[in-house]
Image (cartoon, rainbow, N blue to C red):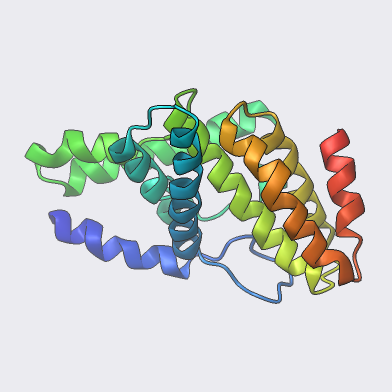
Length: 209
């Protein structure tokens, strides 16, 4: 019981592998994904601030570092399945949020419960911080898929991952998205030019979609 239970549960995130059931040259855990999302978000938030946007850094760190905690209870569900329909996505989110709430009620001391409910909530919303989280999360999806495509992994799911994440990012109205599309993505595509898979064409198709 107590916060020890929460700290102990974090180890489970190291054991949950993203994109399960597919051949991968490199495995990625939910824990490593969360760490990278925080790193992306820091830089994205800096870009926003350089453009005069106010960022709530405490909120940003809370929602980016804990955004996938609920996967301890339901695992990482493949992106095509998770987004098959709005109804299914909503149901999965309800289950995840319900199990997180139950965990807090059962294990977290009452004086800290409101804090944990705030920190472990679904952080993606229309706020600057929520949108930055969305972009950072999709950026890591792009990079995970990119590394597989660059090595010649022919699993179609990685093309779908790369393409869908890029389409989602370009729809978000943030300064950091403009910077990503104009300065970071071209470097990524250029580096992948020697890949046996045509990453440049996949990228062009996604941006034109």
